[in-house]
Length: 385
Ligand code: KIV
Ligand code: ZN
Image (tube, rainbow, N blue to C red; front, side, top):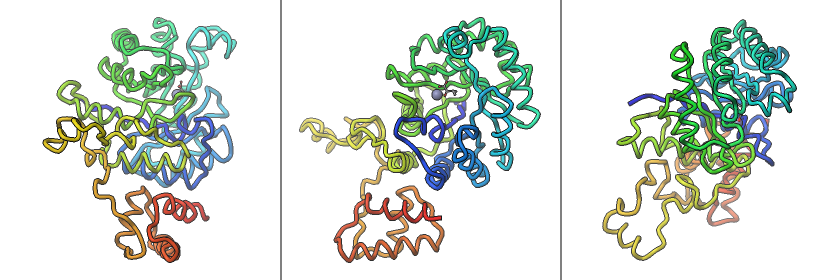
């Protein structure tokens, strides 16, 4: 098995989903759950974009110790300095710098020549390495860039100290075969590529983000980037839970693994959906409400005889509780704590007691308390600073 690192960008690219705006306690709650989920790197935000983002990234870097926390920066000294201030207390700080490399972006967005773009990338990566032990360079819009130019800029930034090279499919334009070819080309033509991590970052505009990510892995990517529930800019990013389950279920075919803890998937998905307000479509792979539901009589009959007739993923594997505990007026603190943890919250004893008291008051009026009621209680308690 070849190990593939997982870079989660739910709190940066995911938060760029139109309509999503997470506050600091919400971001921290998600960050802690991502740590439990086992991601290798988490992009906590874009520190130079706002004071709120700066504060959120700094708090996550201070709190999350088992995952490398990163933040995004444009290829500008001021962005790099701001990111360093936000990330420097992290246990394994790293920077993520991006600069566009496609003709269309260089000409119309940056208004720079290819030579100028290479010079800026080189200078800013070297500048970042004066502070950060690890620097990821993203060639924005890589999938629409000239492969020869990509090789040139990648060689230059590796010499300047980049430790990770990311080739984003920024606009979700590529196809699995084409994206795989790009990775193969870069692996073959960049002499020092084995000294760095090579990363894939896919968007889902044509519905191929997960397939494209897997094609990249098959052709030499050693890191894959994505978000929980596939949320993100426009049609979103590669859904990490789909990717992890696909690699696991088809390990007979792919021979790649990640450190993701599969039975944390449902809890992570629910938490992100709840806090971002982005509901998961019923028919979404792996985490949709219908992913383990069987409607046709023939399918139900098959399921009763042997579940593997129609189910390739077991609900337990991804943390879907088949015996969902109903929490109500007779529930004690132990069951309540279990439920709270299942919903993805980790509360101090004091906060747990506070939540339990509010919950008990609610059960005086309602026989059954729904997950939505619990989320309301927990959100109030965790955002009450
Ligand atoms: O999609 C993209 O190109 C990005 C970069 C900032 C890496 O998100
Ligand atoms: Zn992106």
